[in-house]
Image 1 (cartoon, helix red, strand yellow):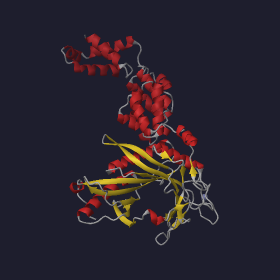
Image 2: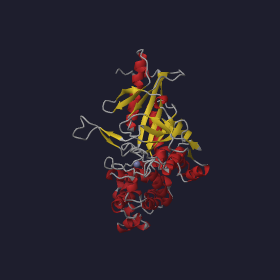
Image 3: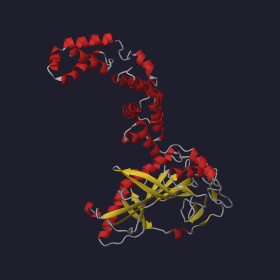
Image 4: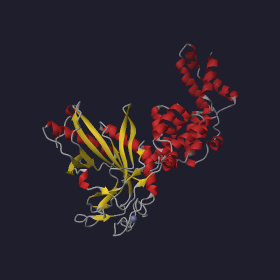
Length: 487
Ligand SMILES: [Zn+2]
């Protein structure tokens, strides 16, 4: 397929909407009590309900509803007091019911939004709806000796609890789509409704992409691109699809509404089937389930139990701790990271320095050891104590940089290490003065240069004193004392 060059693409406006499926982190499936265990032997977490045996009836999991409501609130949606389940009829070999239990014209929640920032520009992306549904099983196409001829079916995932989050077609570039999915994932992880682990399929994304001439009002015909199981693929697939559609339209072709599959190996999207319309699914109200009612009291209780959302936390870190926007963003990437930071900030009493130590030295040690912040051998309390010692002048920054790796190795608090190694900042001013006098005596040439106005040489002299004190003299004290002595 010929792709359009950038100068042609520049004439067009891409229009993108995302449909995101998220697996809820419940212990059981949505309509039966089977365990949701990833990686269990095939077809072991199944029962008459999720196998769709005759006479078996679904019972809605309240845990799943609770998480779905929390997700809706995290996306600023209005949760409907009554929503209904509907049957979406289609055949899949890994779906024994022959239909999916989903929600159709009365979804759980509507009218939400996600705020994104791309290249410093803030933008609000609408969330059309959040609805609940069950997942299908898995067709296993490889891994067996006869996989070249046969496909196997694993029904463990049948009945896994999902929410589908449909956005408005508000995004105008693959970067905006990327930012939207990033914010969405972060919010859902913070409120702990899902692990959002894309590798395990707990977060799956389809993109609706169309193009229209810039300035046009009517959207072009869209293609739905499926199988975007990483952030990188999402961006690649959207960019490919934009270039493909522009080339097609420019060459006089007509877009058809279709479902396309992203091929990660070739980086292309390929036509899978013509896109079905809602009426093809013969939706009808699910007769085996009563309408789902979410009372105001319940909703309020759930809202009260929610943690601060990442976007709000980011804003607060800037205003309350005086952090730069970028630092606030790094420190709120995950909930454990943000909680760790707040403890270091509080223990140290010096939020800005705390941020630097956490994002610099500790992050470096964690990265080298292949550990996440949750696994840090240095506790937030201990890092806070170390930062406090530096802030109070009890320990020089240089000594602290030697202490932290030892804390990392042993899990000890900084105090005992500093005592054991005699690293406390020299409080004996007489001793510091003696070192300074020695350095002045040993470097007559530099002293002469300083006196003749070459003040840059001060750095060298301070360095000599620090070296002689093994980094234990406080740099500001040394600086002041040297200046006084040299006039
Ligand atoms: Zn079951």
